[in-house]
Image 1 (spheres, helix red, strand yellow):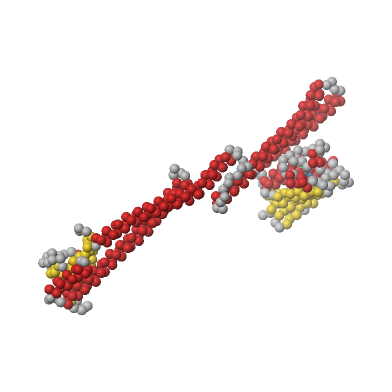
Image 2 (spheres, rainbow, N blue to C red; image 1 turned 135 degrees about the vertical axis):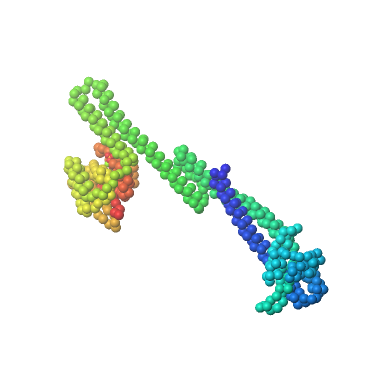
Length: 463
Ligand SMILES: Nc1ncnc2c1ncn2[C@@H]1O[C@H](COP(=O)(O)OP(=O)(O)OP(=O)(O)O)[C@@H](O)[C@H]1O
Ligand SMILES: [Mg+2]
């Protein structure tokens, strides 16, 4: 039970409220008690001093003194005793100790010239306070006795302990009220969290593309929004994965079906040797197609699994090497490659992967050349602007229709004219290119116009 967020919040909040109220109340109560006691003490000291003055003003008039002490007893509600220098009680307003010797600390202090007080615990709590009876001036002060006051202050303690129990009770009630409000607050907090947990569990079981409904503007609302975005994202990834598997199966099936048909034709007929050669040649073409598709799929898988091994390399060197490798293929198709990469910019990259990008882009520009144009050319150039390196590969090929541009980086996507059998391809080249630029954190985009040509730009932040 205590493992749940709700239970913990309720316990912690209630305890905080209970302990805080209790501590504050006890401090206030303690202060109240001390100041009440102080007030009583001061009052009795005032009475004691007045009595001591009367005694020292009328040293031989014991009758007057006794009467006055009795009057004080009534107004101050305390017992007054007069003690001589031998600690013997000479007058007692309660008529009990007259003639007896009293040697408590207050009497000793008063006879030594100091006023003092203390609280004692007898039948109840009582305050004992004594002031000296003095004669003479400040310099030649003489102590002639003491006035001892004994007052019942049990009422102070009774009130204090009653109040203390009330405080404990109030704190307990506040704690319970705190528990109730924390329960409500915790319920409001943990309710949506439990909803999110249940939804996340369903997500992990493949319940993708749905949304959890939590309308809040706080962090929980943001978390719900993030989980919803994740659910949609995962749904798209899953849909793409299914489509990809379907496309791969389809692309693998086509050459396999052709190979089967060719082999069956060879098996069945008594074909002339020339036709055998032609059919076997077709089988080899289909096998080549299959193996190049598989090698493209492997490249893509490798990119998903392995991280690129990056080092600083000069882009112009990589371009020069790639152009050298691709030139014979380009020339054989009457395509001219112009290398106008002029800066010697070094960037952090995986050289082989950059080469893979260039080979794919050059291969496309050669494949999708415009045969109706007298000259087919490709230009590779670079520039640096605002701390960004930009590499551009442009051609004057057949171009790409505007509506196809957003889909070029999708796996197996091929633009309409190139789907025709005459241009070989699987729609994987640009997918691989995009994957590589993503792995490097670079941007890539395509601008194209049918009949005019295509420009592919890659931007690399330099820092
Ligand atoms: N330079 C270009 N000129 C015209 N069309 C292009 C160019 N580059 C790409 N395309 C279009 O984009 C599509 C996708 O290109 P991508 O390189 O991914 O696949 P592909 O060349 O068809 O096959 P693959 O590269 O797998 O052999 C191509 O089918 C083509 O229609
Ligand atoms: Mg290609």
